Length: 265
Ligand code: NAD
Image (cartoon, rainbow, N blue to C red; front, side, top):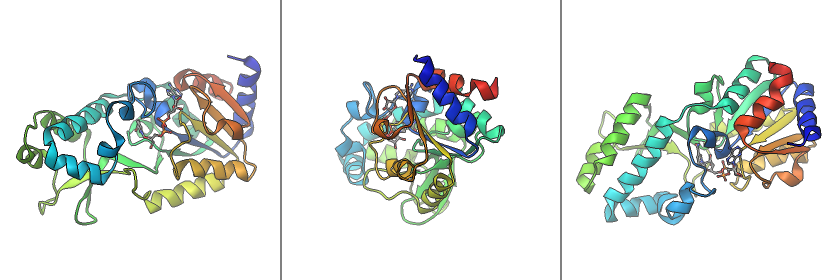
């Protein structure tokens, strides 16, 4: 680690009073949740055309329900087994110290809230919130309920098994995770909250994101365009690197505690 860069990052964080963290899959990688694009990540193992959008998922439901269920079960198993890592905890501690005003995350896991961040803004939805296919009804699953669902999905062989295992509303309507798939719009309320938080930020700290997923990445780019400093911490250079005031490359779970050390001790 270049110590000049670390000190520059520490100064940016120390001088800021309204930091907004903008996080992506990389912050949860050390918690055991693979990112989408890195080696071993989801889209390197399953085709995005089949699994990343509603049309592909509907086709799979009829063509190969066991494969779809295995895939959903695997994602669910990884997400429910993960625990917050030091990077999630540092952001929660900086919020308690009054430095962080908001955490805008592209992640659908619940690691920010479990680390203590009060109300992360989840612009790509949330794996624990499920929405009815044919109405606006939503239901929040408890962690044990999601774990049970994951175990049931692993046993699915036929479409009938899958329909039986799927969570439903009281009226029998099927529920799906309220996560944003390719081609779907971001949830309007969360998007408005994210825009407002970023508009008020005096530092945007992008962590563990390639900056390739739109329109999410545009939120952080807009801050840089207004002259708000951008601090980047990522494993490798990203689409944010050319815009960043300071870039630190390495693991979030190692870098974040170092950057916040002057404040958190
Ligand atoms: P991405 O997969 O496009 O990029 C992740 C970035 O994190 C990469 O640039 C990588 O170099 C970096 N990275 C990997 N390990 C890291 C570490 N230990 N420390 C710091 N950086 C690390 O992810 P994205 O930009 O978030 O976009 C992918 C989309 O898929 C987003 O919507 C994302 O939220 C979603 N997704 C979510 C989860 C989750 O909820 N945990 C997991 C995978 C993908």
